[in-house]
Image (cartoon, rainbow, N blue to C red; front, side, top):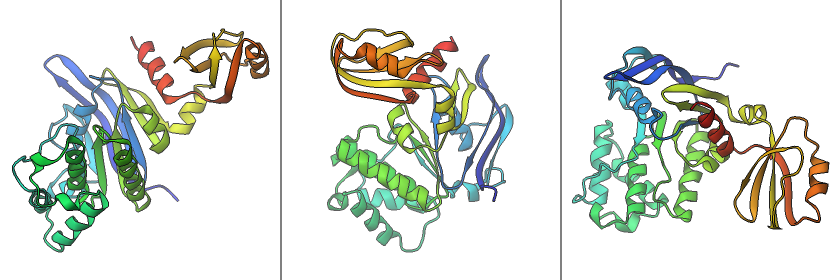
Length: 297
């Protein structure tokens, strides 16, 4: 059975003055998946999101949501969490959510739905506080509620974990995956590669406005080969079969050459350092990200 496509972008191009910010990019997002939109600063991610939301018009190409062009009806089917805060600081938390919910056409059972999400995000005791009285992390959670209060079909999250402590970060991750399992399409733009690896089914990486990686995350990682993750004490050597080492002190990622013998590498490390962990796995997305961007220079 063919998977349902909720968002389809075809041959998208956008320039500002003479600079091409998006260069003929095509991709699709499927129902009930977390889709990672990745790239270094200035790659074109924010421009891409603004084109999808019809805030900016493309020079060429088109965006289709459930096969249709953008309209007021489509607008109500999308939730958006921007990276920057755009909240009214002097309004009460409950009223703030209710206002944005009304903009999405919500009329029935608004109060009960607001109470539900305030409780789920541990903000219920702050419902009558002014937005400016909340911490930055709480304001981020408030923005998250605003983006999902109308139960959108597609949810676009720009740096969703920015400013969150570990507990609220985990809470947000759990909710995102819960929404995915209920059939929502999630587009997540973030610099946190570890979160992408844990959460995303497929990814699109753009650099300098061009598509450089696209597809199933596991397939992409397999294509880029393996690495060895080690935890150690001592001075780490560079054994034969290793083409590059990212050393973080007592923890390192060793990138393997093609057909490298991992048993020989293990033997070369034993006795030279005290090994606490030796694990062969696909390369980290962070390392793939760095390699792709550097090769594009």
